[in-house]
Length: 442
Length: 145
Image (tube, rainbow over all chains, first blue to last red; front, side, top):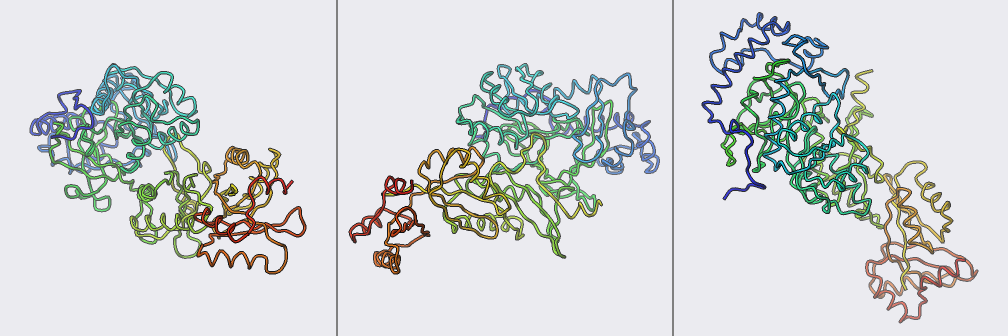
């Protein structure tokens, strides 16, 4: 008896490749990749320094002798220092969503775009997509890879795309209703926004035709999935990717939904302690490092994602052999250190979702008014939470306080605010306002 | 015999009180009386309004969170001891008062007490058995004109 939440369809037989064959393929493709990047100045220099060339890579373990690539390295070679093909071979540029500073460009050849489409098709099919479906894509379509990547994946499967793009939630709802979309693609926080807006127009989001959703672009929690699924009456699947590696399609959930299968025939993953850079043990959380195996225009070697997750190598009942990664539980750089305690915004979110009826709209404000860090969590009050009794309202605050403390070990100040006053985000949500770093930047 | 009271959530920052009041004013809605409960972090404004349903819609449109609660209004002689007699009756009945507030209007010799009980019905019965005058909504609103 296997717990598939939907039919276990597999798009590409390569997803189920036996592990010994997979490792052999990875080694072969790694060597090819090293040859391709040999003339990229950054790698040329780095390989010379470490004395490693493609011919010295005998086993996959030899990968660890290669240097890391960081976001800073990409920035230092802005705009196209990492390009490994001639400009004439480039078919597309995308860029990181650029939440900080300049974007980082990524280039694709036609073959890269072809592979990207297939990788997205794989996880979409794993998460219920069928050719007869209509898919509503509420991701931005610009330099950001989310919109185009998913779009190509849907087209590859043969389903219909509604390229709604980002913004104007009421119009999005109209499109979903009038075109009868079966599948929703967006960030999980935007799905909550859609549900909330639908409700405010007097329609139960469960009455929408949506059956499946594919979420990515920002970290989220299992509790959030439960809330979205219960509130919208659909099955939500998680997928993962980052533009520096390819965009969405690096990994995605199968119908077992016990982690996201990394598409190991196209990427090598490592999970390391972000301080020591040594591999962590099975199932331990660490920073994910990716090496692309088939990218042509802009391959990356041991790219440090700053995403914290866990890897699970145990076999999956769905038959896909790619190692599974957990949700991204945080980023090495959005990790807050509060009075010496490491806190991820996703933990605060988890705490809020445990308090019945609390909206997952929140803002974490961190400051240091004296010598000690102080955290204020602003939470929106919902009508069902309002009581005319002061004692009940105080109890709500205390309950939120207790949940946050039980998850993070931290006492925070809980500030109840009026509904709809915290900013809604269409793309990546900014959940943290850190006044301490503002001072450092100045 | 119960009166519908509106409760409005207020953040503790300047302008929070005037916004809902302005919204009601624009809609031509008159406030019979109000009471404020506050802590350092937030407040709750409780309102008695004749057209409470319209007021609720107006306030929600203006972005407020509003809750309707049933409260009990009692008319009392406006002289020393008027309140104490009623409190005594409630105490003897073993009922717990969540909160209360008072106001006067119209007739000079009467005041109105507003009480919030967890379960108002047995309290109303007890008060009436004791000959205490519980005001119904229509009377309260008519007197308030």
